[in-house]
Length: 289
Image (cartoon, rainbow, N blue to C red; front, top):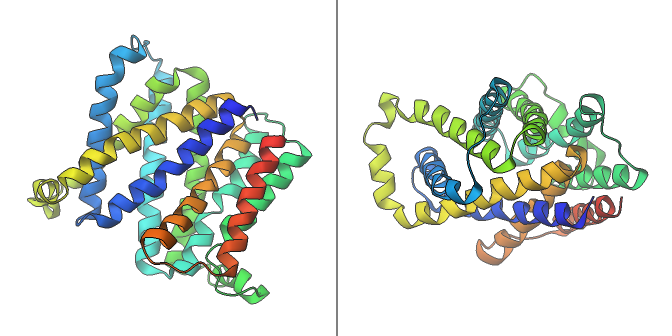
């Protein structure tokens, strides 16, 4: 992986922890996330003259943007449903199973080649991401998430990981066919459209403006963060194999652990610390590979 691609993807990995922190501080989470995408879409619209003329998209590119936006919206929907009905230590590792599917799709669908060092790096990141929420270093704890595959929360978490991996293939295909900025604009626009259809339901009546009044500053801060996260990742994705780019982005877990320890009073036990080191080592191997 080139230095530029690696730097862009690492930068993109820093952003989700910051916007997750903003979401945690908001009051109405679903409405606040909608406002985040309103702010990001507005900023990207203002940046269009700088990015250059909007190329005429083919129907294939428009379709990729629409399906990609749907995939990432469904990912958040299934993840939220899983966390609502299941324990964090059970759901979080299962949601990381996207890292298992992504290299498979990269090799089988996109024809990517993965080196020995790259394979080892992906394995370390997958293991680190899976184990970061384990409660003990025991085989029974490792297999615990898979013991009840009929549990709706478990099925939702597995669906979230699979859908995210499909969205990653669409992402990679889109940025190889079209300008990363303009494809990201389409993707964010479709995500906002789908979210708007959700917040138009009667249950959200009166809540949209109430959340803006309560979290105005957070909304304004979130726009640049979302924009920077989405654009830097997709420019990096254009330059690097998807099989490498998506796992490397799991460095965001390290940032999340640091923010939790430094600002939210979380504890960082030996398992979390070891898992964080595995993710960091995996990212280094992918860079070398």
